[in-house]
Structures are given as C-alpha cells and as structure tokens.
Image 1 (cartoon, helix red, strand yellow):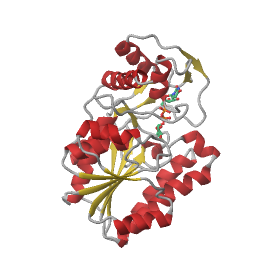
Image 2 (cartoon, rainbow, N blue to C red):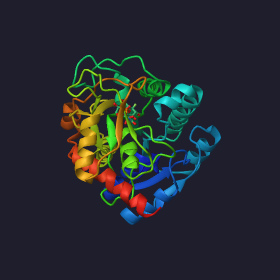
Image 3 (cartoon, helix red, strand yellow):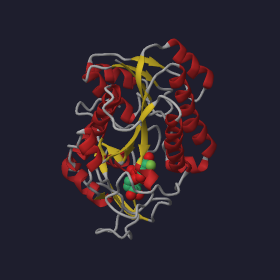
Length: 339
Ligand code: UFG
C-alpha cells in the first residue's frame, strides 16, 4: 500500500510518516524543504529502519507535479501536508500563500483524477472556525470569515475538495487540527521551524535553551480565567496516528460520506500561562517571559468537541499537556547537544 505524503519532512508530516511505516504502509515523500531540512529523512530512517522514497520538487510547479505523477505508479492515497502556515507572513505575502497552498492542491487533485488515485487526507485547521460562538466547537459550527490569507487558503481548499468530490470519484477526509505541539519520544524529530518561531511551543523551548532572550506572552486581558488566550494543544504523535486511521478508513471504504471532516484536538483548553507553568514544571527551568500587547488576529479561546472523531475514527488523543511540553523540551535538548 503506497501512500504519498506531501510535506513529509515537515513537522506533522515526519511524525505521520513514522506512524504510517509502523502500520505497514510504504511511504513516498514529496517535500521541497521550504521549511524543513533534509536531515529529517535520516531521522525517519533512524526511527523506523526504513528510508522512504523521496522527491524534492515544488508541488505548485505544474510541470514538475504532472511529471511526478506520470512516473509514480500505484499510489493508494495521498496525505497532503505541504503548505505555508505562518499567519503573519500570509498577510504580507498573500499571493505567495494562494499560489502555493491552492496551486499545489489543484495540481494534486487534477492528477488524482487523471491517475485514478481516489483518497486524499487534507490538513485543515481550526482556524476555519475563527472565534466560535459556542465552545467546545463541533464540526457543524459555521466557518467564520478568515482572519488571514493563510486561514482563507484552508477554507478555499476545503471548498475546492468538496466541489471536486461532488463531480468525481474522489474521496477525502479533511482533518481540522487544533494546536499541534510536542515531539517524537526518540527526540529525533520535532518542530524546528527555520528562523524565528511564530508558534508558542518552539518559542518557549528556544527561550529556555538561550536561543531567544525572552518569550512575549501576547495579551493578559482576554476574557479567560488568567487573562491569557486559550488553545487546544494536541500532541503531534496523537495527531499523526489519526492520519493513519483516516487513510485506512478511506482505503477500506468504511467512511460514511465521500467528504468527511473531523476535529483533531484533545477537547481541553489551556491558557498560555498554563502551558508555561507545565513547561517550567517538567523542565525544572524558570522561563524568562513578559506580558506584552495582544497579537493582531489572535482569537481569545478555542477548544474542540472531539466526539465525532472519537466515535467515528475510534481515535482519542492520549497525551497530557505535561507530556507535550516535556517531549518538546527533550527535542530541544537533543538539538542543543548537536549544536
Ligand atoms: N503566543 C504567545 N507568544 C508567542 C507565540 C504565541 O503568547 O511568542 C500565544 C498566542 O497569542 C496564542 C497561543 O500562544 O494565544 C498559541 O499561539 P500559536 O502561534 O502557537 O498558535 P495559534 O493558535 O496562533 O495558531 C495555530 C497554528 C495556525 C492555525 C491556528 C488556528 O499555528 O496554523 O492555530 O487557530 F491556523
């Protein structure tokens, strides 16, 4: 069973590759290294003992994409992670975001039709809900106007998939991630963005290890118990496992609809200060942070209703916040050892 994983050397992609290999799938990775390093391929091999087939090209490059699919036979399913994901950058460079995130999806779906590859797992995001009216948020909650071009690419992508499936034999599962954090238990793969991190967890671990001077906590005047914003943080390995289940569901045709959407979160919300406290506890380090103004575009609070994913996928996130912060820290320590 060959599964194509686009963005398979990225953060969530690499963890999913390892879980797919453990479940017996043959993995082909396409990644243009726009936000990761080739060394991740070696780490995957170190963990699983299997070196996946790997191609480096830009999926938004139409000719390259068509050539790849022409020359790669017997793909059973595609997990499409490859996309840009920095909210702030997308506001500055919208065309780059639309070109990459939408262009690559269109190229992939055209080739799925052309080569009869029926199954697509798509990386969507809880960003499509904006600030939900009701919490925890279910898959039925209305999507809100996107706060950024990045968020808009996720909404548009879901629409493109829905429309295409309606008139073709393709099937898809869109997985709406909440906030993925943590790292593999081996500490060989984890979140290592190029440059200054945008997201909370890598900023915390890099501050603790001295790479960044200070963490800014964006806002303490939210309508939450401690005033800082609340998110549903989910361990990346739990998230990766859900992808394996989603692929299997499509291959074995046990899904109920041709297009299904699932929330992937834990169902628990934690504030920024709670995450910091957990980190300080597990790392036994005091974190240098200061409260600053809110970050533009941030929502106040969101956490998932995971009933549908729990019931339909038979999947449940298992790892606690402390396990998330500890594994992130262990990964940072491993990186520091090698630098
Ligand atoms: N935060 C800080 N300081 C930082 C970074 C983040 O206080 O240096 C706070 C944010 O204000 C927010 C929380 O930590 O309250 C989480 O922020 P992240 O940037 O880690 O994550 P976001 O919730 O902003 O964004 C994530 C993904 C997006 C996705 C979005 C959906 O990164 O891709 O969830 O809500 F679109």
